[in-house]
Amino acid sequence: MRGRGRGPWWQDRLQGTGARITAPRELIIEILHETDDHVSAADVYIRAHQINPSIGLTTVYRTLDMLTQLGIVQKFDFGDGKARYELVNNPNGKKHHHHLICLRCKTIMDYSEFLDEELEFVKKTAGKLSKKYNFEITDHAISFYGLCERCR
Amino acid sequence: MRGRGRGPWWQDRLQGTGARITAPRELIIEILHETDDHVSAADVYIRAHQINPSIGLTTVYRTLDMLTQLGIVQKFDFGDGKARYELVNNPNGKKHHHHLICLRCKTIMDYSEFLDEELEFVKKTAGKLSKKYNFEITDHAISFYGLCERCR
DNA sequence: ACTTATAATGAAAATGGTTTTCAATATCAA
DNA sequence: TTGATATTGAAAACCATTTTCATTATAAGT
Image (cartoon, rainbow over all chains, first blue to last red):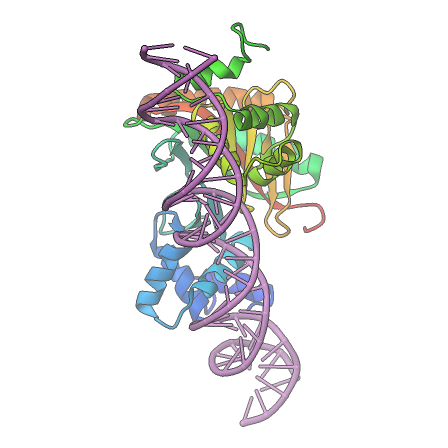
């Protein structure tokens, strides 16, 4: 899943905005790339720090935020006090999915079934919203809240 | 929308769980009742404090949390660092809506159009998920991400 | 009504995720 | 290679939320 040029696929995206390719950024993207779960900034920091102890938490936050703004990473807020991040269209990761969130134990489950109906709905709605609000839609998130098997 | 007993509708709900009816709780619910927007804990505190300066922020948080657990209030997390609260089925409140979030300037726009198609999709999907994961679904959220008019 | 067990409250301190500051360092265009 | 400047890391600041704890208020039982 390597890029077609001399560098990985994401380098062009960064350089296109004037951003520089740095070791911390490479590492952080690599970590996200290897992870098939939504991780917190602290999760990323711990793994990054194991590999390269010179990397700071601050840089993790900054990089995650930057990647989110570029649409490379998607940021989630599940309401448990810390944000989670996930590579969009991660070739090594899970496929597109959404979340089922338990209001009591706060467990987050992924689901990726029933996406056929979703696609139709999302496409239609995104098109209308895009036109009405002159908004360029690049991604979406759908979450269902309630009580999981153990908590109900 | 008044209760059938001697007190407002929500008093039975509280007392049913052994909770007491107190002045702070009455005030906070009244404030939520008068508001047609999702408000932060600080918003509620400011208004409550104007009316009754003895009320503390702590109590606002505690009450909001309690009401959320009782299903009287719905809590939202938009990812801007502070939670928002809204009375469920508030006669004065906004109707059901979703969000359009700009990845660059982080503006959050509400939209409540195109909910007819949504209803169909959500109903179908929720039913399937509920069955498959034995999950009791009580709510959902749909967000679209991208670039707003000014940022694109 | 009066007592009384205990739920609820408020002030202040603690917590914890995230952001800012700032001097040092690294990247990349020239 | 050089230099302008983007990036970095550590520490401090920030800020929403939670906890602690002594005080006060509610409502159940009398």
